[in-house]
Length: 107
Image (cartoon, rainbow, N blue to C red):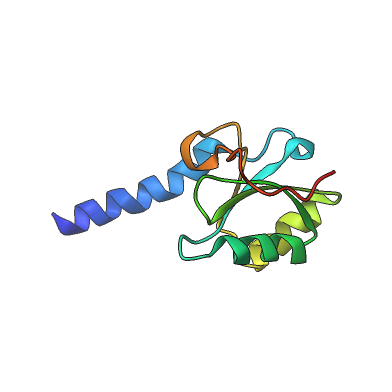
């Protein structure tokens, strides 16, 4: 029974990002999801170091919305920096909904 539950969890973990899909319009922002143990400060630093500009934070510390001038290069760099998923922020609610009190680096 435990193996079945683990298998179902693994399948669901893989299916969710695939169902959410890549961002429809990267100019509007991409939701960057890091491992849950990533602090908000670390997530923001990784996004900046990867060439992205922070748009807003998600409602959990390891999710942020970012944009980049070179989306493909940014996607590669932020994945190398530890991002698990890059998703369309409009495709999912909950943890991807930007917080109103989040800092922003865009002008």
